[in-house]
Length: 109
View 1: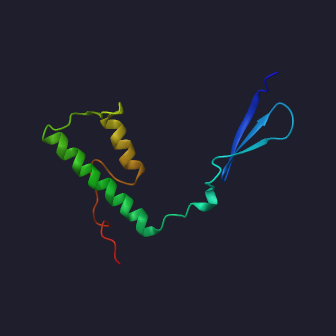
View 2: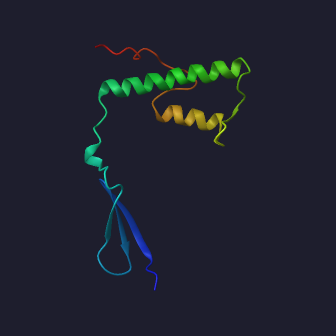
């Protein structure tokens, strides 16, 4: 008989799968990599990621403006993204497609 999954939860480094019977099963996300092994980002790295996202905005908009790219992006590996996808990715990184901000792009050593 195949057991039905009743719920899935996350715990650092593990997926917790609850079934119909018995205790939940803890499955490691990776044998070598655990959430505790991944260092947190520093403020300097967060600022750098945001700056990179905003620089990507300038690059994408320039390539579109110069007719090198249209609003549909594709690569030789079969990945296709539309402009909305690119904008969403940039904004998730802290950038702003319509008004990129470079005031905090410089990181003081």
